[in-house]
Length: 431
Image 1 (cartoon, rainbow, N blue to C red):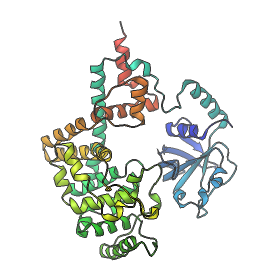
Image 2: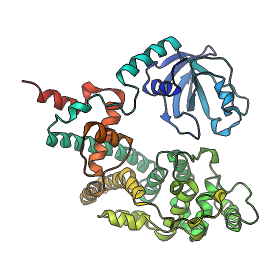
Image 3: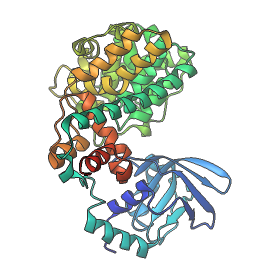
Image 4: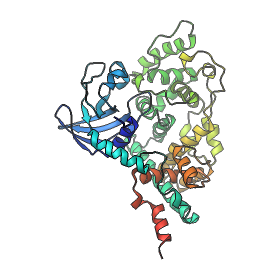
C-alpha cells in the first residue's frame, strides 16, 4: 500500500469518495458533514455528522490505513476518542471499539480506486495544500480589480460571522453582554479549542463570572468549570489546591456542572495559548473590565482593544503555563497583540456590526470595518500560499480576510469556474 494516510484525509475532507456508503456492519450510511480537521491530540475529524439507517449522529471520525491501527495507536484506551462515531479505512482487518467496549462502525474505501485517484492527484499536485493552480496567472490581474474582488470576498466572509452572531443574539434574548461573552469565548479558543470554549461560555454566564468579583474567584470558576480542578494537586502546589477549594464552594453556590476536560487540546498550541493560561487571561479580563461589551461598543482604534484585552494575569500564571509544568520564568502573561488581532477579526468586528444593525447605530458598523483596515496582514499558511506562489501583495487584515475567503470557497475545492479572480483573468484575455 503506497497511499499516505494524509491523502485519505484529503479524500474524506473533500468528499471525493462520495457521501453514501455501506458500513462493515451492513448498515447504510449517509455523510452529511465530513467534519473539520482536528489536530495531533485527538480524532482526525471533529463535528462529523451522518445518518446510519434512520439515526442521525454527530461526533468525531478517525482515519487509518488499516483498522488495526486503532489499537496500535492506543485509541481504544484513550477517552479522547470516546466520541468517535466512524472509522474510515482502506483495509478492514479488525473490529474496533472505544475504552468502554462500544464497537465503532467502519467505512471501507475501495483501495484500488483510491490508489488511482492518488496517482492522478500527485501528477497534478491537487492533494498538495500549498498548490495553487492559477499562481502564474494571478499577476495578470488588474491590481485594482483584484483588490476590489478581495474586498467583496472579505465582506462576504464577515457577513457569515455576523449571521452566526445574530442567531446567538436571538437565542440570548439580545442580551449583548452575554452575546459578546459567547462570541469572544469561541475566538479565545483560536482554532484548536473553539468547541470547549463554546461549551464553557454556554455553561457559565458573564453575569456569574462578574458575581465572583475578584480575579482569584474568577480563575476558580473558569478553571473549575473547564474541568481542570477535578483532580488532586501536589501538597506543595498551594495555589491550585486553593483554587480547587474555592471552586467547590462556587460550584455549590451556582449549581455548576463542569464540562468534559478531554475536549481541550494542547497540540499544536503555543505555550502562551495553553487552555489554563488563556482562562487565567480571561479571569484577569473579567475582574478588570466587567463592563466589557460597553467598552467594546465605543472602540474606534485597535490600540484601544490592546488596552482592553491585554490585562496582566495574576502572579501564579506569570510563572506557569500549566500547573504540571512547574515554575518557569515567563513573561507578564498578557495576551499577545497577534492574538488580540485574531479576536478582533473573528469576534469583535462582526459582533459590533451585528449590534449596530440591531440598534440602528450605523457609526458602530463603520468603526468596526475601519478596525480591519488598521490591523496588519494576517500571517498563516493560506496567505503564505498566495504571497509566495502568486506574488500577491496585501496590506491589511481586510484584504487577507478576502484571500482566506477566496481560498476556502474556491481554491480548496478547485471551484475555478466560479472563482472571481479566474473570471477576471479570462475576461482580460478575451479579444
